[in-house]
Image (cartoon, rainbow, N blue to C red):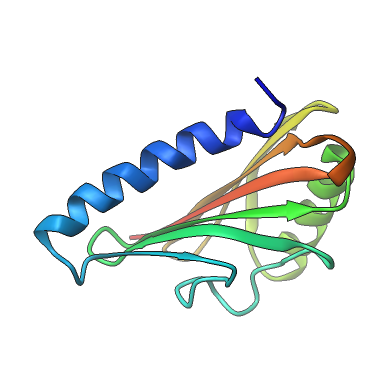
Length: 134
């Protein structure tokens, strides 16, 4: 299993669940690629040089998830998100990790989310951002 695959497996399951849910309600779930979803706050930090991959927005459940590939290592990417989340007014509730994997939980008002960072080899690392609004 490649370093990138651990991030893609849960995301692939989410895509499948979203696609099945979309069969019942075509307006409820949207899947995209290459753009930050509109449901992501404008001030949410995105590292310079990041490439946006797949995204899923479940409007009914108020959930958004998207994948980034960033040119930094895991610890550098984690530091970027920690500093920039706080400077954008988010509260970092937890931050744990190592040089190969990092998890950050954050909140602001009714928004809750996670940033999962995993080593991706020479290209940098993979990041999955999940945002939920209550």
